[in-house]
Length: 153
View 1 (tube, one colour):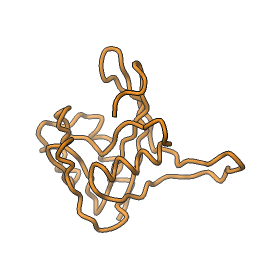
View 2: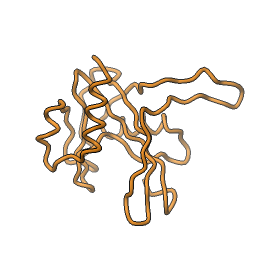
View 3: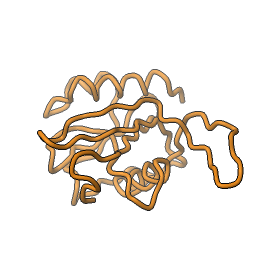
View 4: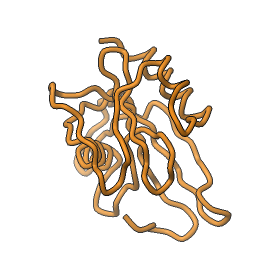
């Protein structure tokens, strides 16, 4: 997806946990280990973007975890709150506001690598994070461990 704005875009990151392991992709263009995720498109909300990105990048249906407030009325729909938010620099002139979600697989579908976008996809334990090559950033590693810790089987 092309950037929607030249200076800033909204994105989602989906940390999918199953049996104390986190699903990670080795991003082809960035050459980094990352969670599933991507840009929020103009015609979707953050939840829709997270579900779409998870499906596109892994072939899996996931269940987003979080709290949805009971504050609906005509013309209003409450959204699941992301577990965390961040802002991260992409280039000298462009940033992403990241909505970080926790998720679980909906079924036992095996994760499939989206080869056009990624070199690899794999389930990693907390200990596996230290052995990934290229090494994972400290921030992404923290989110991975936090998700594994908070999402029980």
